[in-house]
Image (tube, rainbow, N blue to C red; front, side, top):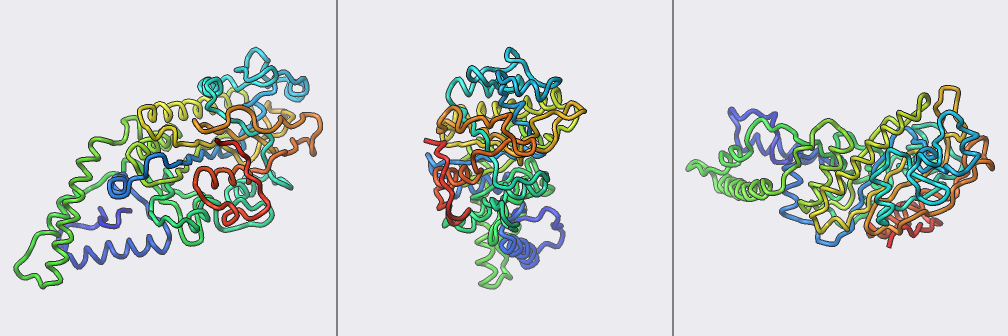
Length: 412
């Protein structure tokens, strides 16, 4: 919420004293909680007052909730074991979008296939963690806290914020009103942006009223009035700038991944002082009738990422962005009786960026040498986090995810 304006506060009988009291309570709560709901006005003001320096790396993290079936996303179509395990829901070699002589992308990922060809896509294979847990909640908790061995009440990006020397309130920004665990630290959390939030009263009128001198004012009250007048002037300048860089018409509050990513693009182009954005999409728990459902879901992801990159085309900041898409686990190798797949273990991670070392990172896990019917992880997801912390967020990974983790080297 905007610390200077509460739209639920009536203008009738408004005084500087009760306005300060109302805004002060909101501000104190936000500081104690480490975050505040914010509006597009807040982002615009922050971009005007403290723009992110050009060339600063930016992380966009996409969470795919439900456990995406990576074997039907990055498909080993030339492997007979793949077809043997999924006779009714496998893709033939001529159906996939070829990556090499063995593997191809799901037909729903046409634009990702183009990114592969233009060397803007990296794929980490066999990603997981020791002693995998097949519970959605526990596995996602592990990915978001970066703690496979014991539960934590802080997320890995929240801890990054805790250790960041930059105290900018919008350093981390979640698109949507509910913060994921990964964005919650011990002292600080991400801000949460809900787009196109309605404003019931014009803030400029409030600033004008509070900034108008009164002959009965004390010296202290005259100082407060002068301050509000100055704030009002700054805001008017910001609103003028905001009309030049505004949210795209396609951005709605429907919560779609496309809308979330277009909001991120607008924030980045505006120069928001944000180093990390988090967005998400659900629906990947495909226990029945998976093939058609997942292809539709992947088409949605593909379109959203494409629209995001298209929105960034004319921005010099486009090359600063590293977009990472992950899920809490992959699915079991063998299809179930309902032409779906059940909870599995290892999976893939997609990395889209001008800075990515394009191609595969790691080998496709064996489809015959399994762990109780599941793929054996060959890469620890924390190695990716170490790379993102070091190369994108400019942080010491040891302070965030502990020792003994080697960065994955997926970025240049």
